[in-house]
Length: 364
Image 1: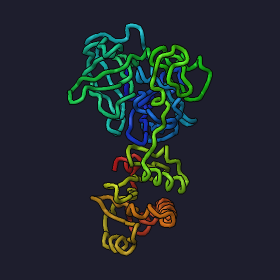
Image 2: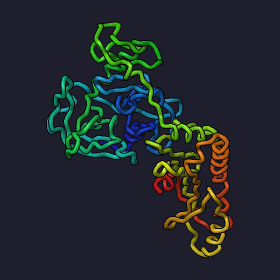
Image 3: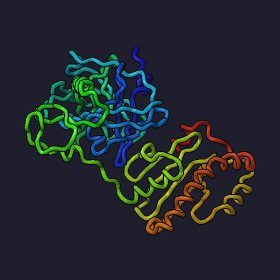
Image 4: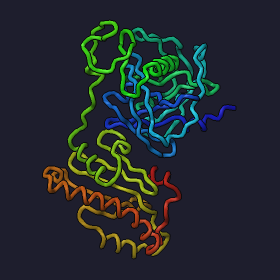
């Protein structure tokens, strides 16, 4: 029997400044495979494992025509890789399973059948399936009933139900061979006509002369000013903002026993919030008095259902002047530092209950 649950170790959430996607590794191959549209405009992204560990990854190869990208992760990403099959890998009416991180959630499995193993869109043959493929699933693997990768989940028909498409895995394997032949670890793009290597923007492909919009393929994404300021705050506190990106104007820090969500609310208020402990079983009056007495402007202890959160809030006007923003950066660092001792204090002095695991905090 195929142990599909174990495959999660080789499937990753891809985190960017705009959204999230999915990626995966194959057995014997260290590079991570995803969709080009997931990482378009980026040279570095973050990868998150099923158990919430994050590392940075470089975008090495972009194939805009086939919507494939290859990433190289920093050390620390442990993966055995998924088995794969190319020849006769999938037929109409075969059972398939799509893996990925839909809508930025945890790694999920969706099962379906192959509606058409050779559905043509322009000059590409896709695997059409009725397995649910939602935003965030893009770049994840499509597996056959034996647990072998047969495709890369790529797209669905807008406003349609259960019509999804996957890119046959053979195209990613071809790109892996091409990348190895290039002999470079720098960013490259494949020409959409001859599929030779492009290393710099050009109006025409130097190999085949085809007129291409290579400026688009080499352009890097500019994040909004307010997002760049938040990332400056994150860097000032000693963390790498690239590894914390979790979507547009949203960052998530998962480190040791801390889980901090960082975001802007209606572009007016900056928030950072972290679940700290669970409410005590008794003597809650003493705790409530402490919470009310400790809350200061910008720093708040609060209760949501059975959980105590510690939050930091600032208005966007505090980001305008450099002297004000320097104060905000220092306050944010203080907020993160206090998380390290606040949990111990609430448990020791007020009988609060710790979360059973870091995963419980993540899902709060």
